[in-house]
Length: 261
Ligand SMILES: Nc1ncnc2c1ncn2[C@@H]1O[C@H](COP(=O)(O)OP(=O)(O)OP(=O)(O)O)[C@@H](O)[C@H]1O
Image (cartoon, rainbow, N blue to C red; front, side, top):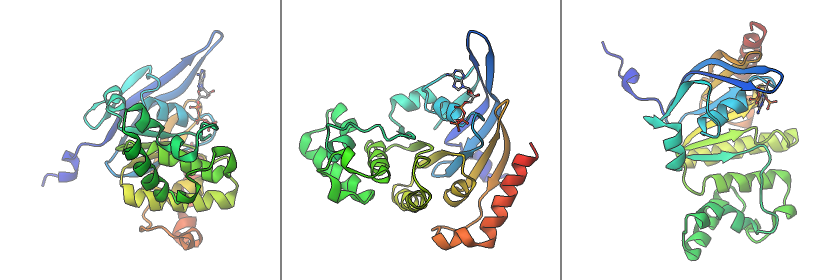
């Protein structure tokens, strides 16, 4: 019998992507023949130690850099077409907010650039800030917020154009462990409302497990895909799940996939 799942096109189709960086003195093989498919509405993590090419892969998906060889298809088109159609929202490790603009005006910057009317922008800003739990901070300036709040503003801004795909590059790695765990829970609450596809870069095994449907494990020198781990824990994910047997088994399984590299 034909497998109907196999006929569903993946949202992001990464096919034998290789990336070589050339510097004056040498060449770095950042990614070697990486192939993976990400389904629509899926939450996946790219997990691996420093230098395994996670950021490089995210930037290739986002069409910010071109691979040396291989291809990326997004929703049946090229990554470039997806970028031009504003299918991506991107959140970086540092929130990159404009200090002279109020929180509300930071969030609506992409709408302003698209020429959306001021009244509509204000309305949308409040919707987005309410989504990330920051309505009360709309009139503050970024420098008046904690690091975690700033990153929530950056997430709200990334969602302003209602992107089909949210790309997140270690967004919480600068935060303390408590804030990070709280932000993980908040991100899942946001995602359960927005329901877009998320590609999340991290080097934290617990973070990748807690958030994801699947974890793509990358290994360095050269960067390649070493394992794909299904996270079978139900949703919604809860704090208590971090203490569960399944959680610890998944940590051990992913650690094992690194050791096997
Ligand atoms: N612009 C560049 N020029 C030359 N080499 C680069 C460049 N960008 C990245 N590299 C190299 O490519 C490899 C992969 O880098 P990348 O930043 O993608 O890894 P990463 O897994 O995201 O690391 P980290 O977790 O430290 O951010 C590394 O060896 C890095 O030094």
